[in-house]
Length: 525
Image 1: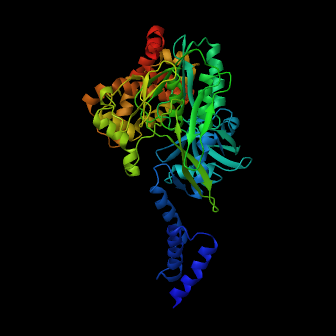
Image 2: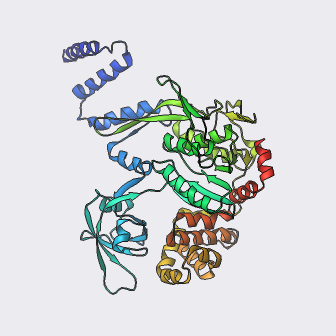
Image 3: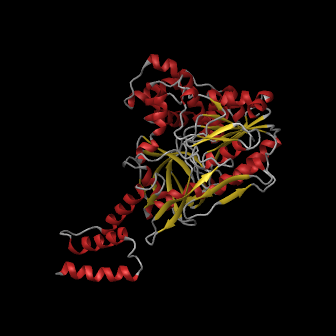
């Protein structure tokens, strides 16, 4: 009797709210009431609701997701461009929290903490040799701007431990990882994500490169998984200028919206080459698609990921968030570059691995886009295709010539990074004395046999057995990687790329092509 009485209570409510025409929703609400009123055991309703929401979203597309309240802030930080904390880069090495470097102008740098310091206590709590995890460090050191944290460090060469009081502040997260002159005429800029601060970072870097005589620009979007739509459009606008369609979006419940260029762009005329690969997605593809469709520059590398869907965040009452796909986006020529997503979400994301097995990452002729639709660029009427990412104008295969299983295991186990931490711990002061600037370091420093043996020994200590034959194949790359990581620690990420890029075939090809202006023009025409 109670069951029928409950149904009599529920149905009038549904009818009163106008939901009688939604039988699926009615069934969900009735099921919820039945579980909470009649199920034999106590139910965690929060967990049940979360699982129900996640299951519904999985039936839609791979990019509509539920984000728990405890994860919302952390997921937004890289795109917002900052977080609040003490401003250090760190690694947990031999169960010790070790400072790799301090953020320039950040709270830790201001009080005198420096790279190589071992943090042994935080607010009086011992953190050395206690099995500390990265998540523990974040919870201990991050906090609201203006709050204090006391940090005790051991510094090599000092007789006593050093105590610092650090006042937390906003710490910038940079989305532009590198900007430098690759040659006297060609500038190089790498953007890792499209965040709230990306456009400001980009224009600042471009001004400096132009002052150094830049005539050509290589824009590296390899591995850039996307970010804010506005940031991508702001960057594209700097290349197009005038009043050109950069993108339009449209969905079932969202009317078409056109996005046009409108500013006096910083780089409307200089030669432009954009690097893409299978890790370039979403906002990266928006920028590359606009440049390709308007014949503004050459796209080089490998076919991009293929994400042409727009998500909008919707906040739920408990602080959690649903990022729901609300529209498709289309390049200026009308292309949707979204790849099919009928398969399961894990298969959709692992499609990039399928490209390797099919030979696409090594041979241009192996590129096969399902449902590829023919379009033409808007100026020279070159053929371009939709339905599965941006296909580059110039294909450059993945370079595996230095990559052996032995070197792969060294990288995957973190041995290379740990070797650099140990090396700098012993040699930081000597390096800083011998190399007062990066140019001197880059020209004169080379990895010696002692450092290579340190790498091999660290590998063996971590269970990576030494393979002499494979090391001989990977030695050049290992040496450059070690040198680049040392440069990153002593200076910044930009110097890391300045060291390692000349080893990469796609980078060398890009510089070669963009400085052969006749060939560059021929590709676009």
